[in-house]
Image (cartoon, rainbow, N blue to C red; front, side, top):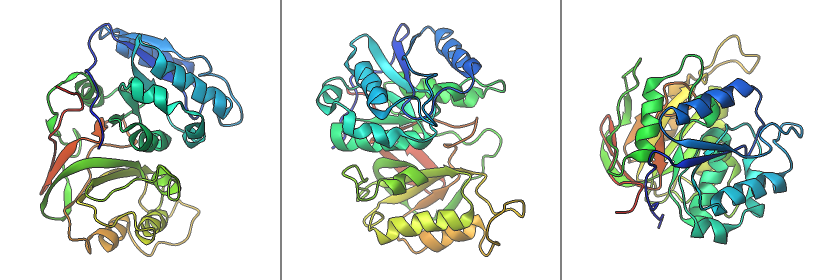
Length: 316
């Protein structure tokens, strides 16, 4: 059972920023993200090591983990916002102080490679976490008020989020399989989800609504990932499927890859039409500016072409 967080964020809350995977590449992205929070009345503290570069990591795994442990243990820090993804979050898991994290649950926000930490927080700490843009992506030059308002609402509203809004530029959602299901929401980015198979923090999707999204993976690669999940038994007993925005995942002649046999939606149809559960495709969550923030671990409902969050991430 995933535990709810104690309280939503309020003006004056101190948000700690960490880099569990890749280091900062553009200092302005950090400054823009910091200003985003400060203009809304929140405070920001930047963890040491955001700019440290060890290959494609923001420092050694033990150092990155120690920084994250310190953010959870610090009573002044009210939320932890990851910088962005990249690769390397999974390396932190053996070094994390799960007793301290369980004793100090707080909102944790990130997407993409941060999926590994969402899975581990669920498994080891039983904690609700938030799948949404990192600090470096909340206030780009062409900022999305849709995404910004969605992030603030997810972290500050004590009541359930209710029906999720449609994408502001493309409100179409495809119902791959019609139906209705209410269950806890679990998942994240497809690639790190697959890399968790065989680990203790492999997701248990039985009785859950499986949410996933991806970027830059052509149809054959999406096919391979979904086949892996199916053959590993991970999709057995799921209550429903919510597919986010699959950015740059359609086959293109510009790709230096194998010739196309199946379009992206044909791959999705092949894997999900055979399941006797509701499947909704195109929910505005993923690797783009106009992306909502989803609480993972709370009850949600798929009903035809609608998705709603029925349970608050925060305890009464």
